[in-house]
Image (tube, rainbow, N blue to C red; front, top):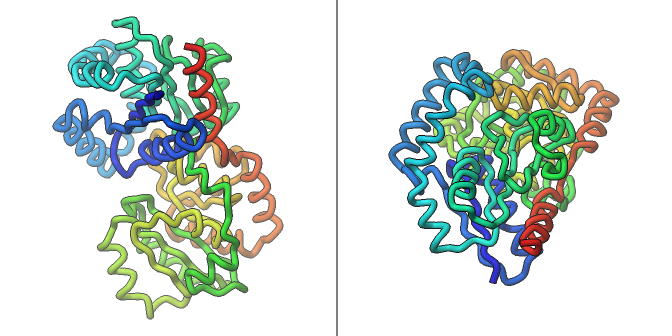
Length: 373
């Protein structure tokens, strides 16, 4: 029986969703395997995980320019090399024991931190199993670059070129796309989705998402779009933000647009089938899912660093527009819904970057890599 270890950081994150998609694909492509998914940060050092998550969230909310400076800054990468090695060494004990006990035939990482730790362990102890790094954003940062990673899965040809410029061999980089659940390649149909949500079939539908945590200026956005006279209806996904959901429910009668208000949901596939465009932060997984569904994107409040880089990619490819604020977002929604030709062009551009089979291709590649060992 083949064993595959899957490592990510942070539950309810894009890294975690990517691993879930890969896990699903592995079991469909390689019968009889055993997989083990681990939140590597929590597993190796739960206290450090809490500290880092807390600091990260505070920096993003209060000093986003600091994170923008730190993210993929070559000077910071060089200066922190020794510190990162110490952190890897400090946290490697549990991972080394895990490798010894689980005896994986392959390891897949959806984040640079566990990928770097496993790469170091492979080098130090001469371990002989394929290590696969899976990127979940459209621009790679320098913390991903290691000599003994057997394969990198990247979202696009542009991302692949960046790896090659950083002296990673072309044969080790595969532009399969960001892995999303294989179910996104299927559609329940627009009419069926709208019927399930009790929405109308003859007006455009705008999907508003704030990620799993329901982040972003959604209240302000709802008030802004309520001033628009153009006919459309709204799906709002509040994620785990119960305060936001209750706020919307209380004010439902004040809104002139018909609205479906949802909390945390596993039905994103169906919601995207119902939508004509999406308003969202440009997280890697949400972006990949939107592209698979050929949805034009109105970007709001991108986090400096990874989401800002995703924004650059989406704007350059003509699949998104970026709002300066909620009022601007409302204006862009009206502009796009009033211009069917532009909306069609953005859908066509999105279709060019759809990679619904990424998880399946990763599973097939891992199967081939294990056979070579």
